[in-house]
Length: 258
Picture (cartoon, one colour):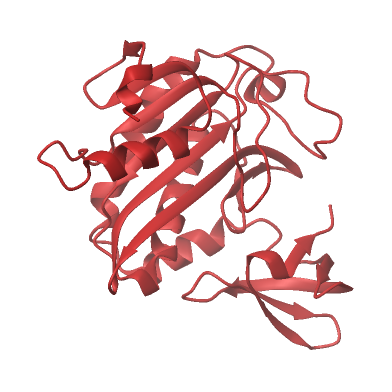
């Protein structure tokens, strides 16, 4: 299926908008698979944005709920010069770039491992990063974001959402915010290619939500009082329990108790 059939407007040469989509990540993936081997392969930072997603996705099997026309919903295409084993470096770059943009609006913004954007204990944005691996290297990456911009009423089953409008007290132009995000990603991606991994790691850890403070977590179906001490090179979360027990957790092995 040609995803371009659904495009209803062009914002710029790299940013395309469609009113309704199933999922921006899914549509981007279909376009890449259909054209990735041809001379029409997508340029880096190609962006697909939408006003509404019929089947928005979060991490794993989580869904992403968004009121039509109120929020920033977009996916970005990259070809990172990374080994597959270092793919979490890209996740760090992307989340830090989103955070840098939001710090122009808010005094305090943190990254909740692995890819969420938090203000206090509230979730402002969710990020879904999907890597395609070829051999030992990344072939391409699709990074999707759902940023709560103007929505004020959220489904009751969402535990802690918040929007920029709720935090700032006034609405924002979603298309302008998208342009700003694209510019920020373009600038930071150029720097990312020459940034040493240890510098990226330091920047990520300095922005990490709940780092070095004790909180409750569900680890291996057990409630544990622990503090986050870091993230390893594969993106696993490192925690130290109050009793001195160390933990190294992947995505589905730890849950924050908020």
